[in-house]
Each structure stands twice: as C-alpha cells, then as structure tokens.
View 1 (cartoon, protein in one colour):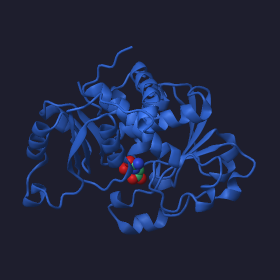
View 2: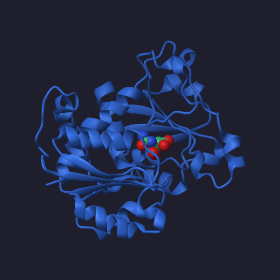
View 3: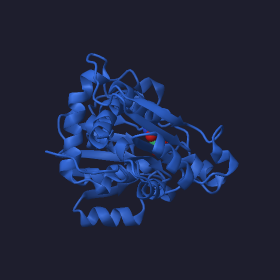
Length: 304
Ligand code: NCD
C-alpha cells in the first residue's frame, strides 16, 4: 500500500485505501507516541504551524507528533505578536512560513483557507480546521478510536449529536463513515441540523442515516455516541446561541447498563457531565491521545 496525497485538506480527497493506510501506520506509531521507542524518522525536518483560531489538542498533538518523530516545530498559535496584526494577509504569511519549514499545519476561521494556501505554497499543507468546513486529521483520529474501541469500522451504528450545522469535525467525519458499512443517527436542535447538501451527498454515497430528536431514547440503539459542542463563535447572533445551548447533555445515569462508547472531539462545555469520566464508556480522553499516533502517521506520509 502507498499514500500519494500531497496535502491533507478534506477527507473527501481520501480514498478508502488512503484512510486504511493512515490507520494502520498510526498503529505502528503507538510505541513512539507513548515514548517506549525513540524515532529519528523526521530528524532535521521542521513543521510550520499557523493557528489563527484557538486550539489545545490539535496544535499540541501535531507538535508532539513532529517532535516524537525527531523533527521540530516553528510557528504561532495566535495572531498577536505576528505581522498579521499589522495587516499581513494569509497568502503572504503562508509564503514566509512555508519557506522556513517542510510542511504547514493551518487552522483558520475562513472556510477554504487551507485549500487556498495549499494551492499557493510548495510544501505539503494540513488543514487543522477551516471555519465550519473540514477537519480531516480529527476524522482520522475519530475513526482510529472507533476501530480501537470496537475492533471494527463496519456494521456499527453511531449517533452524532449537537451542532451539526457549524461543526467541522462532523462535516468531515460523516464522509469517512460513508466509506464503511455504518448507520448514522443525527440528533441536533432543529436550527443546527446537518446541512442539506451533506445529507444529499450521503444519499448519493448510499450511507444509511436517520434524523432523530431524542438522545436519551437512542443511547441503547447505537455503538457510539459522538457528542459535539455548540459552536458559539460561529453564530451570527448571540441570542440564537442562547436558545440552543444546553439542549443535549449526557450523564452517568444515562449510561447505566450500556456499553455504548461516548466520544467527543473536545473541548466539552456542558454536553458530558464530569461523572461520565470514570466510566469505561468514556472514550474522549483516549480519543485525544490518539491524535498523536494518527498525526505522526500523517506527517510521516507527507513530509518526504
Ligand atoms: C474541534 C474543532 O476545533 O473543530 N476541536 C478539536 O480540534 N478537537 C471541536 C470544537 O472546537 O468544538
């Protein structure tokens, strides 16, 4: 098997064999991610990170991944302190950081930003989130987590819950799930439903899905519950956010007598009670760790 994508922009650019390639390679990376083995695979290479939006897991796990592979990182995690504050445009900043590094990881609030940069620089580009668009490395770690927890990616049922309108993690995830034999239940406030164009795509891809309103009634119906945060920062009107906030939450009692695993890309706000953390069902912290081996696999595949 080989991997020929230059950039990681959208999960829709992946063939199923590309996804499987990364998931398998991530498994090989685990001992390095856990510091049981030392790697020199990317020694002498530099990763450029450009984060225009807040991030904890994505940025730190990319940085950890690069350093665990023997490489190093340059970049910024906020606009403050860079020439962006003086009015420098994304195109120019990307030209500069791309000349200082061997690959770029970009998070930006504008949908399409990563594709734009990839089209205009010579080094490989990873989209670490472009507005409400895509978040492909998150999707790969989500799949990796499902595969590790359930031992399979086929013949599973998953409830995807929360902000399906603005959530880029779920906009990515569903296209990857559609590559497997998976049944999806979408659960969200009416105002935050999965966009029609994505539902139309899923129909074309023969992905089985339904739209439901009750989370509690569906807990036992599924193998995985994928919770998401309401994306407060993407609401044009704060009053609209206040109307939908806190509508879908889950606690320890809801999960009594079920093996259904609970995932979340994090950060959580109020979707998952802290008392869920102690249960075997809670997979979200392991999921966050899985970002390291999966991102190691991605970096290893695109940085030559
Ligand atoms: C997500 C994101 O930035 O889209 N976080 C992450 O990368 N793990 C989810 C979110 O912010 O809600």
